[in-house]
Length: 170
Image 1 (cartoon, rainbow, N blue to C red):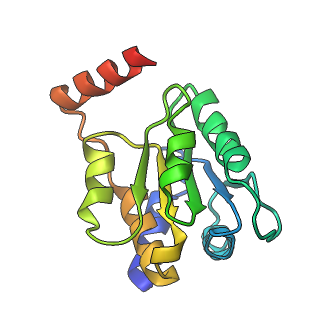
Image 2: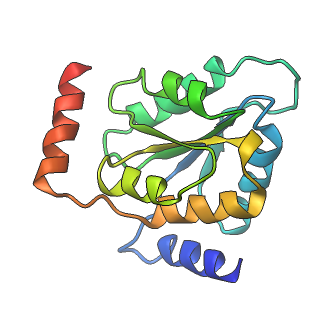
Image 3: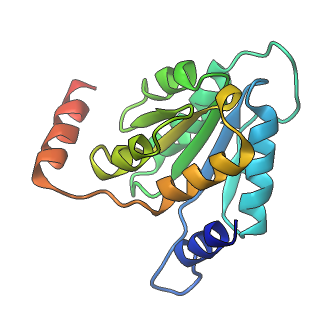
């Protein structure tokens, strides 16, 4: 946990040359408790966050409204700095909703190989991380979030070209 805190603090330095991205959080009932834990951690690290819901645990609530609100905030930021971390049971449906918005590139992580998260940033410049809360624990989730937030887009021409092709489809 100490390494996570150190890296997130480095990323979130308040020096004039560095800016922390605004992190949008969203969840349905299945991801609510994990989102709340992540939110507390991010607040403790002085991260700028905006929680677009759910704001209380309501069993059986529907995720599309919350995920759409998060994705819209990412899509509206023309600087590309805003990121979102969204939580649901598997993360799959949540990512499907987010990916309906122009400029949003949501990657799913619901356990397993963390290289997937790293490559989602390096190759696809993902700006939304969709987490399957039913399949991950809090400690691992915080590690994955740190990895995602601190991994930079490679900027390689082939990846830029592919992202442009995706954007042209929208």
